[in-house]
Length: 438
Image (tube, rainbow, N blue to C red; front, side):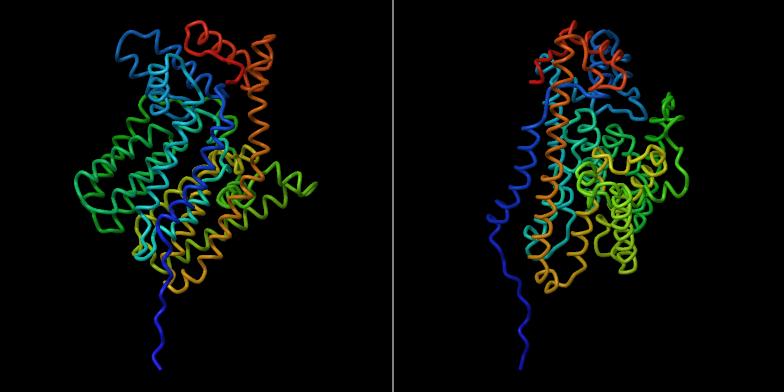
């Protein structure tokens, strides 16, 4: 008797589209609910200080130089252009608008994943769990802190778009990919890592001539980035101070950190031994993801989907760089502003699993995977919303206390005196108008 071939049930696209909108709508509703027009940490120097200086300059050269000048180890030209646009259009700087601009960049990042994902049947349906993994408030530090939002999410989006564009050949696509790669670099220093990732992609796909051109372009951008570069003073004290065991632990814990959801929530839940348990669980999860990647290499996944394979490389390079530079600063592996990287790695893990699985296997396990990712999303909200709410209250108390009696800026910046100087100057010049947080 002839066996029936497996046929996956097709779900209407409009229904999948509606379901896909739910996590995205929830994400942006959360941003709307908790975002505040209040500067935090690097916002004082990176936004207020920049605008204070920019409007005082007359020469175009000086203004351009200021846009490309350093903020710590970064050249945040994209952040500064966004700040200028908001200031010019709105008349004053509004950190809430900046926060929305940065968070909007999550959509092209997701789109880059979608166009890179290879699935012959029901691509839209199988992509759904990836959205539930990505659109979560685990990386709240890159959701509600204006400088970090624009910097980190923009860098990620531009990097992924650059890689996704190289999926197909064409001069225009290659040029656009280069433009996105450059924008990534001038969003965050992490963007520099997209160039070696792209060169690896071109070598895998046997485009050696194009790889040479990209290498020349990468060298030019790297030298341009280093021109006039000075190492921030605090780097000597805190960065590059981790021992080899600390670097290795950081690397694995960083990659596996999404399974912790929220450090403070877990500490309250687990009690006295929380830190040991958190470090162990996240390190095991990170090691498991690394083993999975080794499995992909053995399966020659780089031939199945070179773009997503290269995205993995980009994220691993980012994790290595973070481990080397920040492993000496305590629990930085769990800092929410960096969590966006491992969250996207989790989504890549799911997408690659679907691609290497047979149609019958993918169809069989899809219902379990969608339930698992929905639970991941739900628990991400449950564990992170209290912390997000607390941070918002801290911002409001900080700015209202300062308006009332000149205190409270210690809640917003490690150096209250420096923050107050930037704040007063921006208010006097009509650049920023605090209104009790809203």
